[in-house]
Length: 443
Image: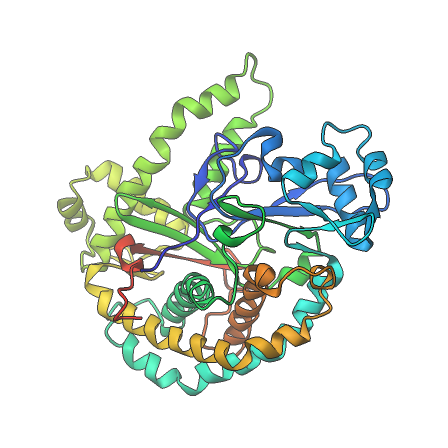
């Protein structure tokens, strides 16, 4: 059974009401500003679901500046207890806390090393270099079998949505990202939170922040929200943030209200808390009905209103907004989809495309997993003795992110940096959430 990874979204990054909120998405990160000379910034995140708070939460601990500096020092070389205690002298975190959270461990002798997935800038460069030929080989298989995918896409008879858009959603996000995480876990290629030494319900990770340009075209990140059985997704790289799509645009509105300057007595935050229940999920519920109705053939506003039960004035505002976000096109009389919207009747096509793609992934892993492992033996954490499979969640993101880039270069996916795009670096799609499930015989 397919199970999408859930991630903690940090309120600072996406404008949520609480840092403890869990939002549906395969992965995310927060950038930590670090001003001290000699240190870079860290991006931190989790794979899984985090309910911990305070000093019991490794993400909270990693975000503390003395800890983030120490982690970078440990990435350079093992350190002894005197060094660690000196670095944490002005912090409320101590050596025992880092040990208890499993962020570090004692190495042979009297030194300590990192003990969780941590990637340096040099690791990032190595991952780009070494995954590229494997991504090229994987891309070539998709190119050779493209006619099979096109044959399946013929069942999606929606004018205005191209095969490239369908492929990006179904192969790039559904299969390579979401299904790929299941395939790599079920095949024991990557360790899940259940088997990590930290014993959390999630896997913490940290990356030294790299230049934005080096993230451009690594299409590996989805942001998601499901309301009333309809899932809204944006999928793209992490160079083009924030995204002007759904649900991201609503999160931005949330943040902008909360951070409004000049309002006294906490009015900005109180306004955001009072109003957000009305313009977040309730809006997405109505927008989902509208998009599904158009997917099923309604083109005129009066027909969409009759199907959804939405008053004409309210519907007009929703349609106008969706046109501005490029979800819809309007020719002065009728509405047409500009992004993939998958309803229940698309299940057979969706599942067939995923199954074909998933089998390509399974064969690739069987043939190439060990070879890539050898090529990545120089990763910092592998040199410190961390098992490869503990790092593979992030490694898989590099591999499929690079594959998505190369599929775009081959013309199988839309060019997300085309000069004509209003919102570059990502695309949006919407689907009935129950289409995510794959039964064993469909796998």
